[in-house]
Image (cartoon, rainbow, N blue to C red; front, side, top):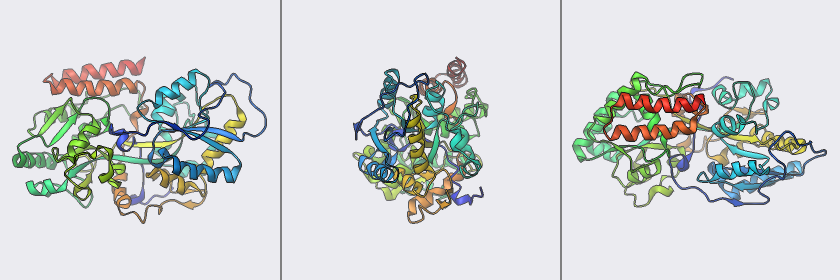
Amino acid sequence: MKRILALALAAVMTLGLTACGGGSKPASSAGNSGSSAAASTSQPAASGDATEISLWTYPIGGWGDEKQVNELTAAFQAATGIKVNVEYLAYADGDDKVNSAITAGKAPDLVMEGPERLVANWGAKGYMVDLSDMLDATDKQEIQESVLNACTNAEGAVYEYPLVMTAHCMAINLNAFKEAGADQYLDLENHTWTTENFIKAVEALYAKYGDTVAAVYCAGQGGDQGTRALINNMYGGTFTTADHTAYTWDDAANIKALEQLKGMDGIAFDASLAGGDEIAKFYQGILKMGFCWNIAQQLNPNAADTGAGKTISGDDIVFMSFPSETGESKLCGGIWGFGIFDNGDSAKIDAAKQFIKYMCDSANTADAVKTANYFAVRDTAEGADLTGIWADNEIMAEYTKLMPYLGDYYQVTSGWAQARTSWWNMLQDIGEGADVTETVTTFMNEANAAAAG
């Protein structure tokens, strides 16, 4: 598929404030919350057409909002006669609810989330239906290649049919930068800057304010995509091998970045902050830049849950790519779509596939994408053009400038849960003065042991 660079939404990622450790919607139900069949292929398939299926969705933009989802499912029911009973999950306990349902033999028919759960977790454990039969040659051309790769396991099974994607970035307080004379180091037209200019900007901000201006937060894993992207991009380091079989944190470029950050006045390794806490400090004007940011915050910064006590307005906030030596970074991203649990009921599986086709590859896809408030993973769906659906939204259109910088979706690497824990523990130890190289090696080995196990 030919792609215009400005609209080449080659994305991969984790979402909104939840990805940065912010608030999440409590679970509620808009109908029956799960199917009665066990998550096993050993049960006999049901005959006939299914008239009801269940969907459990994490809070992915408007897909976490009951009113918006009801509008989509009502339209689907009108078109197909299939009722969709929806359960709204929170990230705080959503995984526990899904895992408990699987254990009890009551997994939902459909689940909406990203490849790190659908492919690398539940798919790898044999709970998901292979959706490769839903993808013809046209689909494989239309869907961004890196996105489709992330939704496919090493054996070629597709456990997620993708709908939307986005990129994570950072943000700066432009007014504070101007007051410190640090705005000269920003390429505001392209939302990029070099590592050299980032260092100069921190120096200027510290000289003006005499205090911490940015935090390498490490209280937990909330928003860790920001610290990973910062450290990997400064000098061109990597997080995993290209084939996602091992973690590569001891890359010399990562060591250099960590030593540079640790030695800078104005940069703090803060074990009291996770991503959402960092955003709050950013809003309050205490921090002059934030490493936990994406389109969800940029679209509505003044209403963000973590904005309590804020002293800066959305007009002062400019989103930026992470600094790199060339100015061209590799951003972490998020992908969201649908997977089907294999509950042994062929009729419900067929109905769930109809739902996926309706939302992800039809004339109705634009509505499903806009509900998510992210970017489509494809330019067209069954001939319907998706490239212009955000043309009337100035912020979304501007944000597309970051999309060509989306990097590898390495969140599908084995041992991912342990890797996230090891990463913030590593940052804490470095912040307390431990030797950088030895500490990185120790915690990388811990993550790789989990990946190998």
